[in-house]
Amino acid sequence: MAGQGSQKKKSCDWSKRYVDHLNGKMKCFHLQMSANFGHSMTIPNKFLDHFGGTLSRTIELVSPKGIVYIVKVTEHMNKTILQCGWEAFVDAHHIEENDSLLFRHIENSRFEVLILDSDGCEKVFTCAGIKKTSSVQERNAAPVDISRSTHDETTQSSGSKKFVRCQRASDSQRGKTAKLAETSSSGESGEEGTDSSTSEDESSYELDDPQMPPGRNYVLSRWTSLSEAQEEKVDMLVQDIQPEIPVFVAIMKHSNVNSRRACLVIPKRYASAHFPLESQTITLQRQGKNKKWYPMFYIRKDGSGYMLYGCWKNFVRDNHVKEGDMCIFHLTKFTGGEFGATVHLLRETKSGSLGSFHTSHKRFDLRDGRTWPKVTGVRRVSSRPYLTADRVSLTEEQVRKVEEVVHSIQSEGPMYVSIMNKSNVGTDGLYIIIFGRQFATRYLPEGEQTLTLLMTGKSNAWQVKMRPRSGDAQMITTGWRHFVHDNHLQIEDICLFQLMNDESKLTMTVHIIRRNEKS
DNA sequence: ATGTACAGACCGAGCAGGTA
DNA sequence: TACCTGCTCGGTCTGTACAT
Image (tube, rainbow, N blue to C red; front, side, top):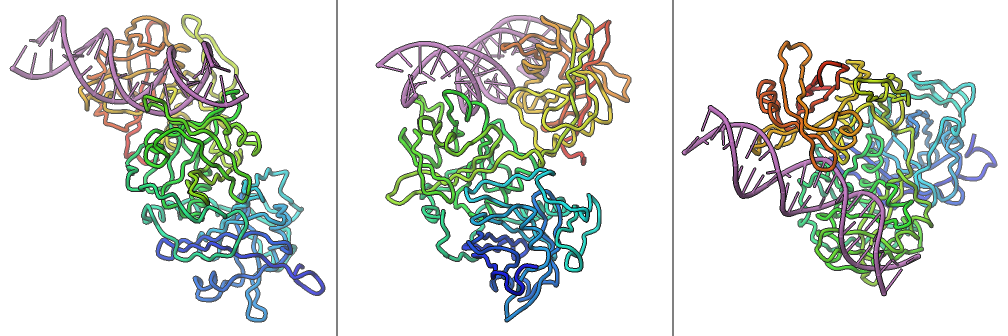
């Protein structure tokens, strides 16, 4: 085992940052592997202080794949050292010099670990990429005490899920601007320029912004939402960097990275609160890198758009930013007062996707020859067996609820999901439902139609008028009011419209998911 | 007079075309 | 190619005609 006999002494340059907020319940620390890192590791005393000066005899490290490594903790010469099991963790994740590890304390002696390479990019591990031996136990197996067996014994457990619950509860307790409880200042590379945050007025940003998830210290680009796995990663990063103002999280789309005119749109409210007041070049720097890029921050003359372009393409090219990657902008004033951002890049990982139900390419005929994708019930990575308005994004909770209903009804027909807003339920005097262009053009007949709405378990039927709307959309108007009242629809309730295969008339069954309904 | 239905304007982010 | 601007489209709001 490492750290024994003639083997090199393996140590780590422990975190320059060590945060402990949330009343001591959530602990997170960061380390970078120094030149002589390796198969045993000394725990810094300040970390141990949070555990009464001592750790359990074993701790559990939950890898990015959710595999739990049990690591033996020993004491030697007044130092606490991780030994047996640590080597297995290092080997299995191909941890190299200058990689960074982000540890978060989940519970008892368990830690979730995020692994970043020297560029600050998250290392992505496929099943094949994780070193496994015959002793590796599969999902749901009980953790194995590696200290009594080979160092490659690993096991996958529910650690990640527990971590999620732990984090959720903690988030609710956390204030928006939790401060660093303790910050060390070892001169770790790559942090230059990040220690002086922008002096923009943080109070100018409204916390009820729809793109700022409640209880979080980040802002999302519009029309995007994070998967649970992505949310976890952002949370970990935010805990580590402790931004004074919310970071901006952008999930790269085709137009951001692939288009000849690649640019990145900054949400208006965020840009107007925290970016310069007029068009100018700004500075971007990757976390852990010295190189800088100078994209143009452009404000339209009418103030209707804020975006990065120009050298933004170079940034994308030089850092191999791909569609689906997450760029997290930590706004910064660099040395010399130049405005810009330190960018943290988290690569897209399929392993973290939630999956939903598979839509095959097979289609079948419907009345008037229309066809729709067949739902097969097979889990898949990204697409969903239902449509929403083009730019509507569901929260993970809403996705979960909808998919439960979709799964339970086992429908093979097209489905459309609409989250009730003021105009849908009469709060602002309007009672309308709009079927977005994609759904309307694929599945709905053209022109004005009479649509029959049904509810499972109810004998009632509601006749509503459906009219074309600009942009190939279709809008339900007349009659929808009665449906809303009869079924007590409220804002944020979800209506899942299931198009029925009825040759005699246009019919949909509506499945209502109440806002407060537990999934 | 009040409630309802409808048309259309406006907003803002995404996207793509035009021009120097 | 870099930069700027116009168009698209979903969501929202406003004004008006019509029905009761």
